[in-house]
Image 1 (tube, rainbow, N blue to C red):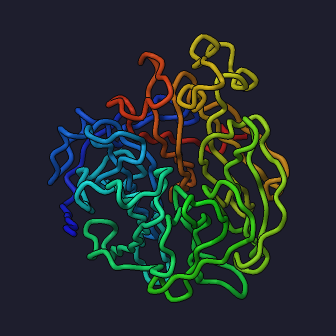
Image 2 (cartoon, helix red, strand yellow):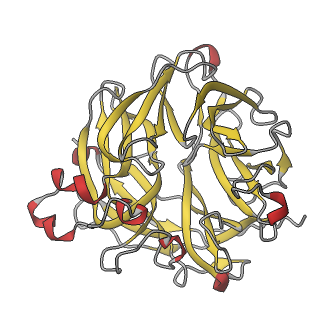
Image 3 (tube, helix red, strand yellow):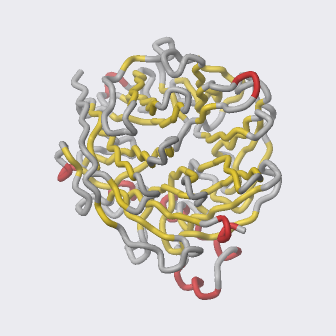
Length: 404
């Protein structure tokens, strides 16, 4: 086993500023062939996927994601993990640098958490072994390993990976985007990541730690289903979850926990216009003294026209419903002031493919959506389009005024 742990200094790269502060502003975080990745043979990479992102108490935006290797045969192909940071709300960026490598094994799913009590970043990593003898007949891995990394310097350097959850031999699906630290009530300080376990990653539940990430438990909720999920905490300590829907083409499964994630309510359907076949983002934010919840996800080619502006009508991605990559398009962002019961918002990335994503709030109050995507103008991708170099990691910044 050969882990590689790398870090670097923050030499900044300039990006374009907004012409209109209320208009969504796009920034490239990483595009293979354009963005240089330190301490890595980036010529072997194709596209990048599955970003994780948090903003620290010092205001640093930290983004971790996985590039695909050109020799990989499927979308479980993140042979490395890359980190990039920004100290000015995404206007300029540190060099992209590789922070973890495990030979040609796949480092996913992952989840990034910020512990405000210790001022440390925490990265959970599941390792999928690509050798056939480590896989079952379905190729979904009955044997995986799970690790944790820490950073106490805003993502500039990372600790050596430490083994966790050794009693869980199958895949651990660490949610996606980012985990959370509970801030209210009896369970304040708890680190929490929704997800699942099992040979197929099919048992839903919550990973949690009450000792700042040194040890982890998994609380099963007793349901079998898709285990990709996101969570946020409401002001009264209730945890709101969104689980990826797998039985229909649209919507997300939503539920709550009143006891720090140990038990979870029965799910119901929410956001029926959002494409179901993708993990999405959920974020608690403050607007003055008011609390709100932000959601982002792909609207797909079939429902985005409900939110399109007339001047954008010619820029939508279109495609068949059986194409996951074309369905992951036309990203939308929504805001709720009633804890996820009702939503307002609309289309933010017309013409883009828009896949896995995560949301953050910057110190100036603006919202950032970090997503895997392909800009308008690139030929339509078919299923398994994950191996295209055009698939990069991007930031789109939104004002509250735009969401309202």
